[in-house]
Image (cartoon, rainbow, N blue to C red; front, side, top):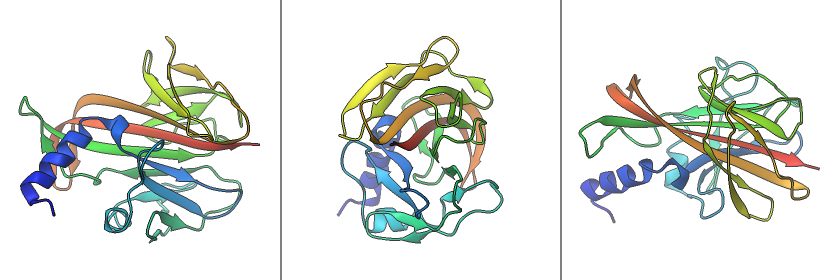
Length: 214
């Protein structure tokens, strides 16, 4: 078992690379929302590592102030969700704030979305479709497009490809057949933010978008 000091170090290393760990939402049709933790194209967390996030993950449909009730399963969090709605979540407590090598106090914020019906942004960091159910997206951070950002696209066969947003933050999905796709991007900014009672100096954001192509 890791000691607290080693655990803190391990979490800081992971948090330093948002591409190394993600939260994402999966849904089949109008079935329940399933929230997974880990690597989209690799291993997923299980057990206690998943269960401890049930109380800090805010999953919602149309209204951020009306979160859906999550229950913990061994490999996922799960919640019933309204039919025909895109789903979103926020969690800024996956890891406690940590000190970077330069002494900066940092935090990690995870934003996730499932579905591509809605053409507006409702999260700080989000992939927004240009048209409902379309395959072109704009990566937006607090209302502004993010240009030249590396995006990892994981296809239904767990094949991962890295693309970049253009000068206007746009990205076209290279479709590779039916099934579930997940897009992942990270973004680090210097900003003051309250996280678990501490004021941090910088934040590492991660955005994921998942959807099913029929």
